[in-house]
Picture 1: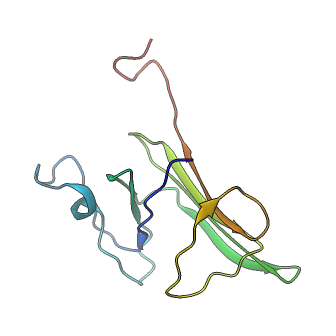
Picture 2: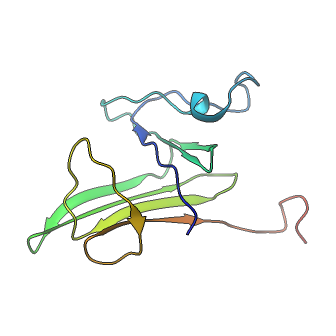
Length: 124
């Protein structure tokens, strides 16, 4: 499984779009981190920015004595189409890093989804 460089920057109203400076590269293209509930998401996937402010689904809950986290982040266009991160029976702690693995109890995991259709140049 390829490593997913995960930098979670959330909750802001500003993000990069096609009208931004062409000098915007990597982490500079991500929305600034906030803690205001503004509803944005940004990370790097193999060094390429992925950001959105629409359709974000997120929860962290205690069920049967175990903690579960999930965030699903689709975007309207671009690759990848959707990023999903989660934990299964794993409590998340501040200032910790988590190795992404298989979606099994006690693990943190990720999925990167791609959508291919005929509207994408170069695909038949």
